[in-house]
Image 1 (cartoon, one colour):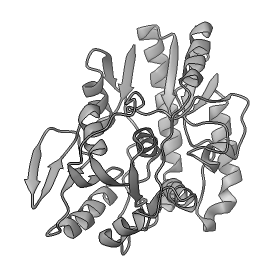
Image 2 (tube, rainbow, N blue to C red; image 1 turned 90 degrees about the horizontal axis):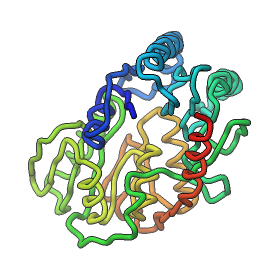
Image 3 (cartoon, rainbow, N blue to C red; image 1 turned 120 degrees about the vertical axis):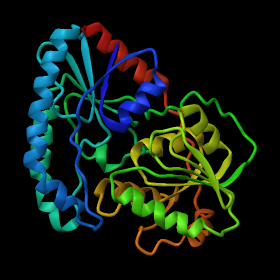
Image 4 (tube, one colour; image 1 turned 180 degrees about the vertical axis):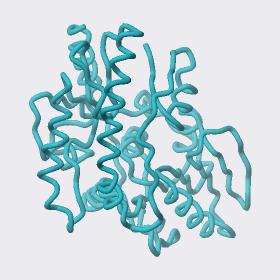
Length: 323
């Protein structure tokens, strides 16, 4: 098995799977400004994105030849398909949502993404098909012939209902593109400084340094085992509503407060939808009040979501039968 990734993702995967071969495979690497124009910046980068899709498609051809790959599973990378081997596109975002002023672009985006996803033999969606799902319109508004729901995927899926004594009032997990990750970190650290909350902060920067400041345990990064232990022993988790984080929280059954990355429509949609369902409290980053958010979070139930492992097992067995 070969793992190909870039940047922090590659570092994380190398740590989690030390026995597997890994290679550097460049990503799209877009940096965003500190204002709320992220969607406009994404659209302005469309030519660059198309070029990167073309480049990664050519790189894959070389990898298939060099490593004699029997199958390729692409985590939301549109150029990793080939007619020479069985290819799977893994995504929770079959439909790309636009802000209200750009809604007119959604049909165009559906044509473009449908073209690329159609190049793959199968599209795996880490969610369930029924209404009790996690991704909402992102993966249920649109039906594709190749689409297969494989159930939520989490590194904590085999936790088996473990329990832990409380160690922290609050766990903060930071992630996402710069400079918004750092802006959010500064905002939260400022509100935690001098508070009576016993907190643990995971900065989302792969590394091994650890420190403690005014009652806060600060980590650049935690591996899956320590991340699970920290989450399990915290009353509430404060984070961005990235889909992987949502799946992890659902696996653990932990309450959370979500603050979407400003201008990132996917996170804004997920936060709004889960809040409307009474599962997780969320608020905008601008004017965010931590004390108020923690009080409001008590009104929300959280979610405990156990996926049927046979969904993924069936998908993998069908993949193996094709190669």
